[in-house]
Length: 77
Image: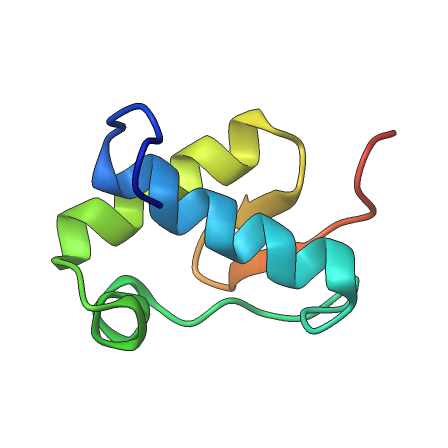
């Protein structure tokens, strides 16, 4: 990533998850790990994982159902 513009870690995590969604590694309907597990998986704090999930929601790639979890939806475009 040398030469890239600096960006927030949560955006980097969201970009990584988005790549997994678009490649099919995380198919439509797949449940994302909870914040603690996601943080451990990507080497970030749970709060950073939470911000990454919020970013993915804004991108229209996931939806969160209270008390159920966060799930991959069909990407726009």
